[in-house]
Image (cartoon, rainbow over all chains, first blue to last red; front, side, top):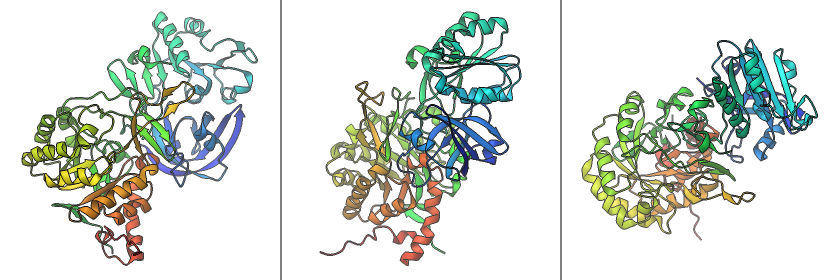
Length: 252
Length: 307
């Protein structure tokens, strides 16, 4: 059951280019939040402009606090990054289905700001390898450094870690130690990961994003094309079995 | 103690705050967040005769102090609705209104016929104002002749109150309102969304998959208020349910001052799910300040200074 509360911001920190760590005091949500779930984060009073809350995936939930990692992509996220410690923010959560915990090995594939929910999963699960890719070193988040799991970090320009795409080594990782694949990131990355998983007959889950209005499943605004018709990202997802999605209709 | 109860025709509501169609499902999701029985009433997502997949995504786009939507009346169809959603409404202790839309007058008649016998439904809202469907939406809602014919055909089908939801996308809402009232509508709901669009100048494409959508949110409050005001001035005896732009208690009260007997909260729920409860709570203080003993006294008590 989600709760709608006002929570106090305890930390706002710039952790990479245009990327911020936002920590809030929210015990009611922290005790329930699971990896892959999200919250609708509002702007406080008056709630007119921006009008809609922003869906943000949990990056962490412990000791009564919830943490988000947000990248500034528009004026809404810019305003969220501009808040101060001590501010009160309306939070509705936890929402969405979250990742199903794997039986054995989990292979996590994170592209850019798709990292937070997978970093949260990596902190809660055992036997994990985290593949994380960014365009360049200045965009890399600190989150993986706090994790004890096996990591494979790549930048497209080779300025840090391995040079190339996050999916370049996916096949190798699966072959080395098979498991379930969990992906979050840009759609072209998801499509590439899904192609690799299908080729190796490996189960693959993807976490999708969409512009949302209600966030709870009522308004039908955030639908994506699935094999059996439209699905709501907020309520049926945001995590989907890759085989449920109509990848051709999804677009990039 | 202020009396919060109101009447819409034969229906008694414990307070004048309802949730608007399309923003609340049947209340299932929001009932996980708070007790929806404390509302005056709920209006369900619009139901059609056959299932509708809805429009091509993207279906929503945020605009200055508002949003565009083009959901396209996605719903499971009336048969599935009666099977899966009506049982949920059984135990909800507030007024339950089902919103319906047809592509033809015949479809509307059939739909209302399906809903009419259900004891879980207290009233029926006739949606002739959805801007996101090709047939039966604005094509019906902007034509007084069609409205009179439609409401006239629905009137004998049910004894349940018929509320007619009007579109603001007309030159004269009094003409469409009159058409509904003359044919036997029990209440007028104003307004549905305003037709609008948004454009991505980089890609030169519309922001919505369906190109156009319906504008809602605080941005449309002034439009909603003047429509309610015009209707109330013309039909002081017909209950008006004010909808549009309600983002805080003040705006709900403004709707009532303009002539609304009750209000519906729509997309304001998205930015603040508890908004209806806050509005209900706010009446006590407002009525005290204004010297009213009942919320009914707010309706139409707008003061227009003489010039």
